[in-house]
Length: 486
Image (cartoon, rainbow, N blue to C red; front, side):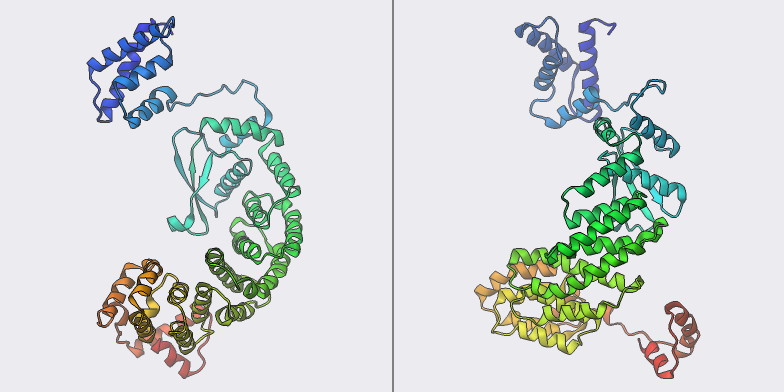
């Protein structure tokens, strides 16, 4: 502000040229001179007393970055927006929510920064749990400061959370918008969630909010949400909605103890939901087109894993048998989409509910000449469902598949290729390699068929430890023989 206008423009253009050269782009001193001249020429043509940012930008785009959008974005980010964050003195009065936010950030040692930073939290530590509660409350208020990464992608355990923190100018506006709900972060969250409960909200949205408020340590709101959930479940006749709602509820019950919360009050909700889901699922899977079956396919897996998880830790009635009977109806009933029927057969086989002979019989029936090629390929996609080890370890299944493909007419085979390719593309590289060897008429590689020579005397020393690990007692010698064989 103290320098002349011409000096400011020359200095700014010189900074832009230095920035471009640092990124490996061409920016010579002659271009700096030309861009300054063009800036003043444009200002004169537009009848301006002095050059504005618009003239500077037009000259910069013409001389330095003809058609190079990357260079323009680089200059805009570094020289127009910048990455320095200002600071308001503490003695300046602010609205209450902002004051509470600053105090919480200071207490938890979470200083907002313009550059993204990673934060790993161990929920077994009280201080880290407080940070997690605070970040979830910020998210509930719509302040997009932190983003939670998926633990599955990072191979993180249940006790770990990984956040990416990035404070942007938009966050200040979001804090202003959140201030209408209350004077502190906690009060604002409670009022907003109470208001959301009175709004028209879907069953899935209700379960997701319940999961978030538990993670935000707003336990006193749980009874109201569970009552609303029970009411929604009683009135909702859509089985797909029930399937979407079950996994979040099971996760909340299973992993609530990680945050020192007790989720026993969710047990009546699941007791109302699960029987209706199990009874209505076979009918809901009938007469579905391809698009609706594709929507039901991942929900079937998610519900299956939720029922399994529930059976492992919960004191609920043993729904696992009822769930298996429901899968049997899906696998055997008519008018079921073949992909869902194949998935049900695979789950029953993995459970041990169906023997290999029964699964082979079902596969043989589907791949018979009376079934269309598209239905057979769709059934195979559901049956194999991401794992080709069934074909590697059970040669009879491979022979059935090989014979079915061999008898397809060329035109029908070409139509079935996309479905088959999508199925086999999900297999691991080692599985595809072994299946390729089977297709060439060779035996599977020794990785899967290697037979270990076991020393039975040494195994006897391991059996007591093994019993303690799995919590079982091997009374008879016959059981011990079975263990050593396995």
